[in-house]
Image (cartoon, rainbow, N blue to C red):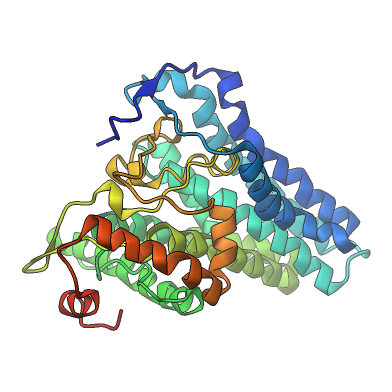
Length: 382
């Protein structure tokens, strides 16, 4: 439940209130500017996305106000529109830049890949994040828009993995995305790429089996995933040939890297208590790291209010609640800074391992030998 020590405040959910969350649209002209200018301009998209928002978080500080979670959805039009309008804009940007970059003569091959590094930051930091918001909604249109965004980064199975595996098994050995204590990101990343795909396929196969259907049945969404991704690759080839396909694949890799960096940060070292017989306690606010920073939550549409997302997965982002540290752990910095730290394992472990140990002592003081406990709940090394 939401922390009662932070009571909801009255809020106007009109256009002006939603406007800060539209800031992500400003990244699109930055990517086009980088493509048309080349050179040092190529650094602009990642510099703004990662470093500028890190600085803004330090300047603007935190926001711990909670909106009324019972607000009628009809009042959230301008918030919902952000995620929906992003989809056609990303299509135009991605394939428009493929057309432009493969035909211009002012960019070297290295600079072309530099442009699509920025595109990957865009399709990962914003596109996948918006697909995450859309996939949790009941509207068939929003779910289809989510699928389009994921197909553009060749990560369509993320919908199945996230909805059927991650939300059910977060904080347990059965969730590949929960980063283990002392597991560096460079070990986490290849593990997740393999295990998430496999766990997503197994989850869909199990759902079909419960209906006495084989995995080859047309209702298996993987056929839909593969079809959408094939269309994206074919469009890339039609626009830019094999060079266009290479650029498309590169931005997809960068986008997925961005996603898994955030996944790594969100639950690093946090575990749900094993109750025996393969059962675990219910998911609680304490099983997600949170960051109540104002600017980065504008950019990431409140993704950093992650505990409440696990409590109410279909709750739209403007209504997500924040928690006091009595109920949920808080990261020392916002996601942009923490994901940069995650790329340097010694720095990450120096910052976060003491945080995890403090979390263990606070929420599970009865467990005194965590090495033995983790071996008992999971035979794989932790």
